[in-house]
Image (tube, rainbow, N blue to C red; front, side, top):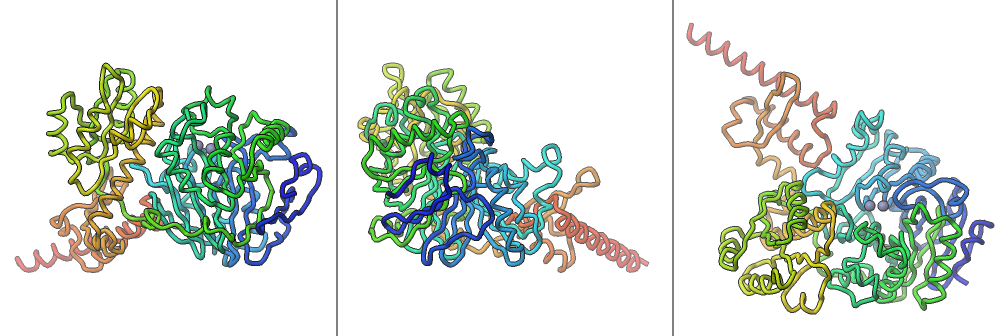
Length: 576
Ligand SMILES: [Zn+2]
Ligand SMILES: [Zn+2]
């Protein structure tokens, strides 16, 4: 039998071999050397709890630490999926072999606390000589580094992110793909009240997908078992053929109706999705803090009673899974949109692009207004098809948000009108339809891209709007193509001009501006330094507040002042 019961997991430290090259080891949470199977991907769960760490005797078997999963390819490439409180014991294990030469990749799904709170206690980030690449979703405003630095500000933690001794590079991601060592990584937005990415890892002939946190795009799918909506189909495509899917399953189907909009999945939906997507085995994770070990046992027992494959288990802190090469074509590396570089620079600022907006219900409009305002997005309202046509021509909007609530407002008709105008456009305008309940057939016929189901929160609207704006931005860049868009960053930085502005006599602010500002820095060495600074800032290697950045900026100002004084002396001497 492939999976032992959770009770057995708790009572014994066992090792099991299953079919298709899977190897499971349960219960070992110590720093012992892991038993690696040659040619296989090693996966270990270090945190499986959702929302908040939940220690105690009732959660001792499945674990109380929040999200953290270690993945290691056969060649040793290390990926850490999320950095919840489970990252602390993982960090200790990694450091047990010494810091020298330690190199890894943190893939953060999103910046909710339960996915990042382990960062301040992840020892390898504080060890000189280690090197980390930190990946996470790009926001419309703050960068990933800024969001992570926020939880380590003076008010919240005694050590700042900039005081980490490791060499850290931050990478802001959109949907696409990239490589870390011999692991190919693809990303996909999830449905959650903040921009959240799922990660699909392909290495050594095996596929692991991590989708946490996520709620079905169409809630009725989970409540009534309806057909997959377009966005749910895309989610299924992303996880298709995975040898192991690690998926949010915070709720049961019975609990879900009272939790709609909270951004998490019922376990029954995850099993159905996995069956549809020919996933081979599913690790349910992000266990609800209220679900103790016995309740998880009962949930899994019920799921196994009613389900044919895939194999389902509840992820357990300390559990090890080894995946051998899949013999199934379903695990082949996927082509198409995931081939786009997930680090493709996105710009210009989405805040400069307009959103078409027609929502009649005052309460819903107020929520959307607040969401758009919070993201600094300019919304253009219209009340007639004539105005809509004019705005389409003038603004070339990046997104349309329409409401369908007949007979008050016929969003489907508006949607069809937009589609009839946009046929010659080089990119397809995403249309987000606000409804009480999605109607997939009517939506497909009218050209609806995605649904916003009422009622929804400001946070939910922000993440949905953000995801579509960033997708449009990526599509625009792809369409432009873009030798320019793909220029190496240092080259781009060299084309920028800089101006140093003293604020309050103590803070140095660097702003991109036009050529005329160059007169402030007359010496060639300053120009060179300036480019380096811009490059460092652009890559977020050195934020403004770091000592290194401040000291370099200080040197430039000092040299500029000396040059200015020399110039003045020469001018005075010449007058004499
Ligand atoms: Zn979470
Ligand atoms: Zn979350």
